[in-house]
Length: 224
View 1 (tube, rainbow, N blue to C red):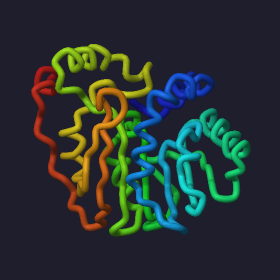
View 2 (view 1 turned 135 degrees about the horizontal axis):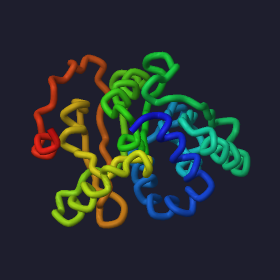
View 3 (view 1 turned 135 degrees about the vertical axis):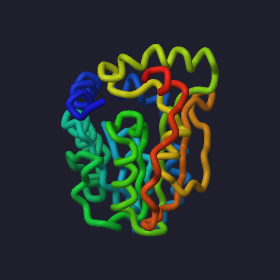
View 4 (view 1 turned 90 degrees about the vertical axis):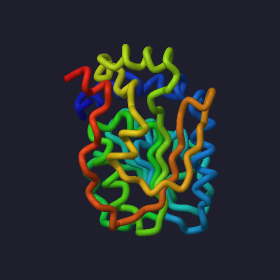
């Protein structure tokens, strides 16, 4: 995965994204926003806001900033905000989530919905989310992770070489992700159809040590 591949993929997806991914992922988005336990005046950052499908789910008394790498997706998010009359409390910016321009501790809550498997460097993504979230704030990551089911896992591994074309990684290990990011997990909740996706809720800690190198998995050993 690299930034250029992601931009090209989501330029292709943009026009039909709501139709393809709106309904099937809606339950996960709703669960995440509910778990945020948002309070009046909270400052929220949504990383990878896409076409803004989640924006109507937020309460009216919070301030929302949404960033995305795709101008085509953001254009649709902007139109959604205008249609819903949300321009006064939603700010949208074209930005790389692995290199954000926000100051440290800017937001109370930071969410990434269906983004980690798209990110070229997932650990770097979490590092930046932690940096811009206030100490003691909350991080929410909603994503697909590799299935433990032998059949589904096999399909994911077969699709893995198509990651650049798909714009996301089909084989994305939850164990390796947690090892690399050292998230201070509060809860993990299966969501969407058959619980195939996972919502991770973590408490933000600014004193997290740099993790050691992850152990080599059997899959990695075979490749090498």
